[in-house]
Length: 342
Image 1 (tube, one colour):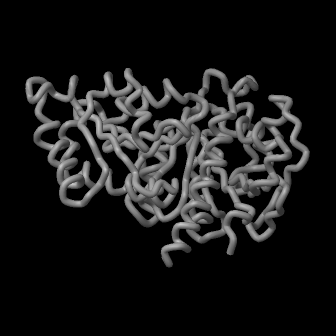
Image 2 (cartoon, rainbow, N blue to C red):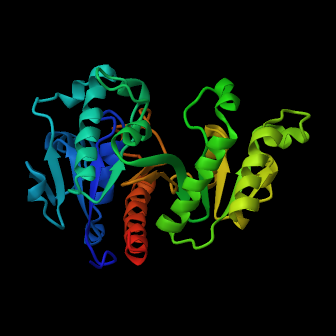
Image 3 (cartoon, rainbow, N blue to C red):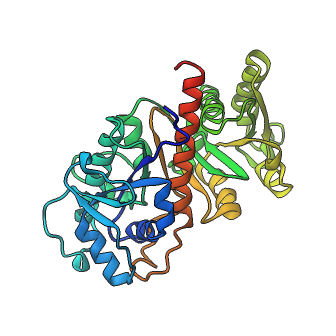
């Protein structure tokens, strides 16, 4: 099959129904020419979409309610109804009860992804606090997908000019140094390296690794994680396995002098160390990609944005980028697998 010409089925989960997820989905899909490139399937409710179309005054005429994924039609916005109850959306409160709907959407969409009924999954933002619903013990999307799909996940923020992966994800800062180990750094680099080759068609990836402490520890004066964990991991991959991996670099100087432009990707030790520079440099254009899994999932680089929800002013650029990044990664990966007989 020529996957470069294949019309990709893009599954979309609703995210928090009180946030901006449905708004940005509708804003992307009303651009009719975009539907020449992919077929969207929203796992949610036609009434939910109708509610947002009305309150936001968004005109979308090519929306189609379906009851089965076999009924998907190209050049239409397919909406699969996955809950039966009649929700009074204008009365919904932001609480654990509203958290059950994004979970239902995510579960149905992930099942369809795993079964090959959709090609990629794009997840709208969720409130992680309310995702901890009855029977759902996962902190967020990444943790849930890691449990359901095959492979080892790695959070990878992507943009044309910058890609940043994380050794640790959502942890209190006081726990970061305990969680960082040479073994975990090596595993993260290997997942990142493979993804750069397979998903981004970079033949010989060059990876930068950041330090953990200020000034990368000043040779042990301000912490020794660089000497005892990070540098040994880098040396193991560089000297023994031929990986083009370098560091550890002091993050402030690394981004301040734009050294990141000399690398295909950067590995950060913890969440804010990587995401603050990423969002500063790429906000509303960056994408969150879960690398290392058997199937492809992306999401926009922002949250639920309750403060601007239902006002019609949410920026859909990152969501659109998430869709097209997922499509491109899907095609790159299929091409790689075909070329390598996988």
